[in-house]
Length: 376
Image (cartoon, rainbow, N blue to C red; front, side):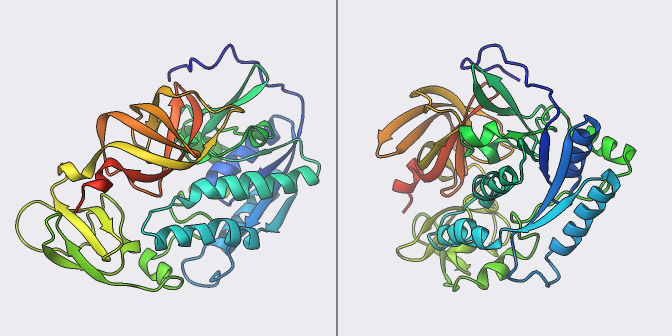
């Protein structure tokens, strides 16, 4: 991984024994995090966060099983564990935003806000009140101290790096957080879990909504937002199908459109909220699926000072390769990113995250792309 021009030689992180509270989610990553810290001789406690209560008895919610797994891990490691309820804060600060964004036709990323508002705010405040020096999570990211600044870096495992989801962390949050898995790759984490005989060693990774779990997405949203069907149209205005509600679709979506006929597959390329129309095109490489520029607001940066305008690399969605861009501040707390090469399926509501080498600088929420002004 490339080194950032922002960073000087790293200051070694101190190895004094610390009071550390680990966010135990009931998954393998947080379990190995607690195991490694205990093996290193720190005073370790666990916390299981229960942040969803609306339908925690249905078949899709794994909160009960996750809590039992977290307790089993704590028991095996010989550490105390608290079960703490942040459901009210989650509903007010994360889930309400999640619903507002979908209702506005955007595609939010609840994991990003969940990290900033729950894991590294509510959990961090709770842990400090309990006497913790730092908190630890199972994120695949790294932290280094440079000239007194705690800097967020990519995880060593390119396939699992989660710095994208942590870009909203502020300097004071990073100062009190550690990421013990940052230098490990996932197969090594699984191996360590198996060697330690952790109950979660073979447990599959969660892919559902942060703290809500895996469930049929459309049926879930229908519990909270009214449906509003309308036309699927081409950029020329030809009706080719019916959508169930704009909130159920995202830019670049191919599956679930239900459009028959000949030719290449259909993809969502835009939303016309005014007329409640979903805009679709044929072919993965249709020009309207590519953007040269995006606008973003709600900017948040990991260092005390925002990065200056200029050349960086960025991601507009998780697991994409970094791409070269130009950062331009446009005033009023907003900015634009201009890409060297057009990017596929840039999606309003998602986050654009800036990097300088391995250093995660922060980013913002995508509000629009250059394609939004020419579609229809």
